[in-house]
Structure formats: C-alpha cells, structure tokens
Image 1 (cartoon, rainbow, N blue to C red):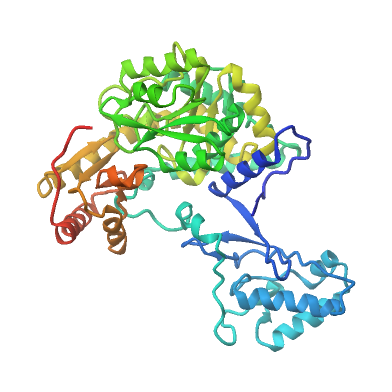
Image 2: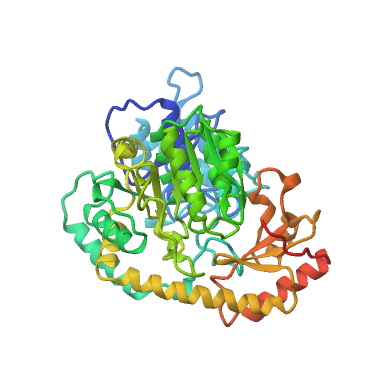
Length: 539
C-alpha cells in the first residue's frame, strides 16, 4: 500500500529511513484528503480511489479515473488486448465503479505510448459489451448497470481501515463523539474569509510553500496560545498539521521512539495505541484514576520509557484533568529521565467545569513537552488543521520530518484561519462554544437523570455506566441501527476483561429539536436491551 498526497510534491533527499517514510505515509491514510494506490497483483493495474462509507473502495465518479497499465511489449498477447483485458477486469471486479469516468482516448494513448486508434478500439469493444458508454463532453463512463452480476471488490486491506474511515458527507448522529456543534459554526464569516483567501492565494507566487505552515498563521497561533493556554512559544516552534494524528506521528518519528517504550493512558484514545503499534514502539498502558494518569505506576512499570502520551486538560474518555501533583510528577520524571511528554490538548480549550487548567507546555518543565492542538472540536473536523508546538530542542528535527514526509496542508485554508484568528473571530467563537456546550451537556444530563441513575459528566460528554458483563460494543451497534451514535466505553480500554462497560454520549450536537427523541430512544434501548445498570464507582 502506498499513500499519495495529491496536494503537495517534495523533491529532496532525506536521511530518514524508508520504514519511517512508510509509517508516515500510512498515518496519512488516517487523515483527510489522501488517495491510496492499490495494485492488482494479476494485472499490475494500479488505480486511485477513495475509501467508501463502510471502508470499501470506490472510485469517485466525478473525477477522471487515473489508470496505470503496465504493458509487456514482449508478450505474445497484443498490446490492444492487454489494455482491453486490464480495463475489462477492473470494471467487472468493481475496481472501476459504476459511473467512473475513463481518461480521454488521447490522454490514455499518450500515457501508454500507443496510438489513439488502439484506445478507441478498446473503448469500442467495452461499449459493445455495454460496460461503458460515451457521454459527449462528459467523456466515457462505466455504465451504471453492468451485464451480469458484478463482483464486489473486497480487498482484504479494506477491513482494518474501516474503523478509521467514515463518509464525510453524512451528518453527525445524536451522541456521536468527536464532532462539534455544526449548527453553531460561523459559516457566513468563514465563507467570506475563505473566499478572500482563495483570491489572495490565486494572486500569489506559484512555489513550494513553507512545510511548517504559513508564517502568518503560525504567528497567530502563537499569540492565541499565549492568551488561551498560557503557552509561550516562538512562531518558528509551530508546525501546522492536518490534525492530531499527523502531529502525533511526526512527533514520535522525530523523537526516534521506534523500538523503545512509551506510556499511554488506560483507558485512552485508541488511535494513540495504534500509532505506537504502527511505529514499532512498545506501549505500556498506565492506569487513569480520578487524578488522571497514575505517574507512579508508569515509573514502576516502565521507568525508561522515552515518551508518554497524555491528555491532561480533559482526559479522553473519562474527562478529568490531570491533578497538580501528577503534573509535577510527570514533568519531573521526563526531565530526570531525558524523556518526552506528548500533550494531547484536544479539548484543553473547552474545559467547561471551573477554570481551565493551563497546558503542560506552559511554565516549568515545558522544555520536555510536545504540545499538540487541533481545531476539530472548536470549529470543524472538515478543516483538517491542527498544530504542533515543538520544544526548542526538538524543533529542528520535527521540522525536518515534516518537510520531507508530511508538509503543512492546504495553503488557502491556512490563510483563511490566520485572518479568522487575527480578527478575533476564533476567541469569540470559543467563548460561545464553551457556553453552548455547557448548556447542552447539563440539559441532556438533567433529562436522562430522570430515567437513569448511573450517568455522570465526563468533560463535554456523559457516561452511562452498565453492569459488568454487558456487551456495550453490541449495544452501541444496536444504537447505530436506531440512528444514534454513542461510543462503547470498553473500547477505550486495553484489557477487555478488566474494562468498564458503558456508553459514552457526546452532547455537542443535541439541539432543542432532537433533544427529546434522542434521549427517549437511548433510554428505551438501554432498558429494553440491557435491563441492568451499574452504580457509579470512583475511578
């Protein structure tokens, strides 16, 4: 498998290993707007496609299919027959899906180094079999209804990717974790700034962009962090990313953690565990209790770990903040051991219970902390923007990794966000979101508490605790069939035998119009399917 960035091209030599390059490329599959090249072993037939709603491969019918057919000119089989067989097999197997537009005869002829007549003859043969049809200026497309029963293309690589993929066009479901309040997004303001950025970008010079991100955006992020998270940093320490996952993979690669040990929270963000596995890092789960990460346990189990992954501002999924004593213990361990702390500040700016705790990257000990922030919860995941604040000792290495393997994303979006920050729209929106999220969480909590005694706040979310032995994963699946999207609490634990059973409910998209039906549906499902609830026990 090979991930290909379709917006950026870098021509350079690098000292990074091929394995690291593959890792970063695989990480990009989990991010936004990347294509995957899948090679058909029989026909040597690469093509580009997007991951579909269920993890299955689909060719975008609105884009021209990009074909790369290897021709064996020494074969006894004619060149035209080879091209025909490759195209026909791709259509019947589902690699080229219904409605996909084929390249023009001229373009494909140039690409393959054959005559246009050869391609025209091939397309005519496919049309005679009713596999494709001409549509004038719209080009030649795969027919919507193919003769016979087409084979569904189920590549074995699809299965493990399905957990990371989702249809971008689908609206969030009630209780779906990880999405902001779409109805509160300042769409008109953003659209205006985006249009201005498109015009400005179009008038600019055409050259490779700064792989760290646009200077103006990095300066605005530095100013914003100084105010909102008490992080004092220079814009040169900031690397713009496509989100948390890219920032984490860049940081782990720059640290050189492969083959070494790392702490991660248990329960904790499953993607973090997966990243360690991909990079060949020996992960050490560390228990989370009412004060956050149990630092003493981490030191006892793996004192020589090179890095610790932690979400101190609002622990995922339990919602508590890392206590002052634990913060100090964690930073002291990192300093004494020469280790690093990767701070996931995903919801640090949206702490709605009391005063927001400053970031680990602020104050004493910050020189051992890599701070990762995103805009998915405050604005929209569709923006595909985040950032890394690198400690000075690690800045050059992270920039090197980013420059060669994963430079900053779309420049136009960066310019729009820089203006959004500079004009004060972001801070205003952030204040509004904190108020709105607190109101929505408390409203849902009050309504569900009438029917469920085993529910408690967990940051922006709510947790419904279920009795031991209840299959919360199956329950979450049943909820999806009813148009709801709670997350199974047990899936955040490493050891399923000792995991707590429960449902994690996000309330950010529970509006007045869907409050009553959503709450009634989740209560009915729990009562009918489970019938048993569990008392709330301290962590």
